[in-house]
Length: 143
Ligand SMILES: [Zn+2]
Image (spheres, rainbow, N blue to C red):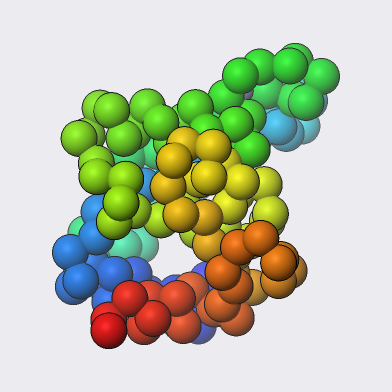
């Protein structure tokens, strides 16, 4: 597993600022039969271990859409459903929450759940704030 060089620094800053972190992920490779849901769990577990090793809080929870687009499920991003469920289950205040991703559909999923969508890394979009890195996004929240 490889991380961008500033990922842990960004997560540390977000946690210092009091944010609780969740993962919301499309894993259509499961629905397409390329890998198992079990393999996704293994990766998530590794992620949690790596965070602990860095003396960071692990992610609070993971939501996985394992379906392929052909399944026409209602959880796959840009649906806001997985985020919406986290909001309800954890009493999250939408006004101070963000959905950060590297694809437009991630930001759209946030919007569809009623929170601010943000794009990092890949593609700037006129519809959402864009930051070159997760760290730059985290630093923008410090003000
Ligand atoms: Zn789904």
